[in-house]
Length: 313
Length: 122
Image (spheres, each protein chain N blue to C red):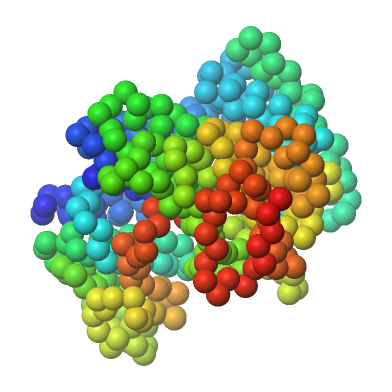
């Protein structure tokens, strides 16, 4: 078994690989992570996103890797009625959740002005070129880790690797099987006590991605401000959900969806699930419930003494 | 193994200088053992598999110096007035942490082999 650890994409990553080629595969994984870290970053000379955001409305040639993420994002944006929107970046930046800026509470006026710059439908794609209006900005913060874990799984397919578990800052994706052939056991973090977990799911090859405002936040005046901004209001999401976990074969889709469902809230997430399906989800609510969809209810094991009431949807 | 340990220190030192660049580290891990985590101001700076340590080495955190030895970890020195962290001595398991409050440094040991969990989503 070879384990790779990396500090990249603003997070801490571990990739454990098992198989004859485990070292070579882990080495290749490290190189891929390094390449993607600069390609998908919001800044730096090698970044597609920096090029788009500084193009002043002009079309920019972008990599197929970036294009795939933006295309998937726009689809989830449309399906979620804009609850997921990669153009929310100017607001994330104003709150201090983008890169190096300081945490702060923007004024209502500033927020309403910045909301004018949020609109995924104004992203223009033509072939390999993309343009956004001069005053808009995008970020791949909600897709890059999911895209990268998909790419790592594809990469391991070309090596003699029997099993791998990828954790990119809590975005989990599995490849192959465990040594004894059994399923992977993935714990779901307790948003109220990140040192604990609410339960585990046993899964085969899949992605398990969680979004919640407990992951990154700041406190001011006794109030907590989380890093996921609602593109409709410009304020951190506060809708009764503590976290939304998505379990599906695609890391990229799981990454987009976990954010989208978290922003949509319990009712919105349930209706999205009923309308589109193709994934399973686990929602944890601030009133102490954990809602698990029927597709994985049989693989979910609640932790003993869990403070949450289990509901199957 | 000596070379690997040196590389590890070098790579981690680089992290402190070029904190924006990606940092990649690969290690063979046999059976997962006790893992020490060193946090500064709440941020995880180092994760060390203590069962894989064969030669003692030190890590300079600026205000604190950490001593990593096979199977255990301790605070060798600190520039704080009370030296409580140094007096804690070496820790080998997760029963208590080493904390330097003035410098906001925390060392904990997590048992990476705990339960049968392969990863945590969160």
